Amino acid sequence: MNQVTESQSERQIEYRQGLLQGTLAYLIWGCFGLYFTLLAEVPADEVLAHRVVWCVLFVGLLILLQRKIRSTWSMVRARKTLFWLTISSLLISANWWIYIWAVGSGQVLAASLGYFLSPLVAVILGLIFFKEQLNSLQKASVLFASIGVLWQIVAIGEFPWIAISLSLLFGFYGVVRKQIAVDSVSGLLIETLIVLPVALVYLSLLNTEGVEHFGEFTWELVGAGVMTAVPLILFASAAKKLPLGTVGFLNYIAPFMQFLSAVFILNEAFGVDRFISFAFIWVGLIAFSVDLFRKAKANG
Image (cartoon, rainbow, N blue to C red; front, side):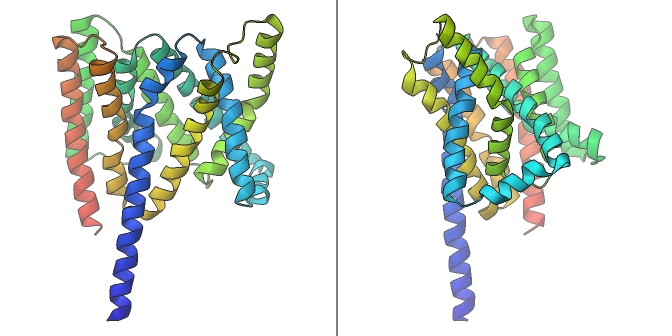
């Protein structure tokens, strides 16, 4: 009896640790919209290059401290793994660039919409690439999200390319990463190492031409790399301790924080038509969440 009680107590402690780590990860991601406004004067290309460089240094140091250099190197030597990580590196780099550009141009609201759409895009890609069948609630969630996107096109007269691009790139990133068994931290290091030479050459050219911004925004640019790595490390640890359903619900913290910061802190325009568009997508997410809750309950 004591052993059972101790086991339950350990699971509860692990769950609380995972919940704290997961919440912190999504809170940091939720602050990205505000953080990258600090770098609005820096071109998105330069911010991305610094994000890659400092992320490599921070994650590389962590891998070294964890003594995972050998296991990470073995991933690089595996051709299939390296191929898929090269593809995922290009996808996530494009995702980062669009997000940085969107924030710098005052479109945090559009960026948040992209991450609201991401879970629903993942469902559609699962249907296309993995023949995963959609149940009635998933079909309803996709339908409402589609109406929300169409409303922006027809009523507002603009195609939400930022949101669509971010959600598609992140969705395909998930599809690619599903092809290989690589942990998040090692995978991030390899992905950033792949594009590191391009980042270093670009920054060197900026320095030669005397148009770089590192001297003026030193800590903000260094922080961009650290803020990329820290939440991913927290999330990787949390994902091992939490049920999939709990992780799914935590996923909404970041886009809601970005949405709130865009409307109430950055004062982006949020008229009736844009509200209607978001409302349809939120209804779709509610349907998706109900389905997620049912699955989590069924799995104990």
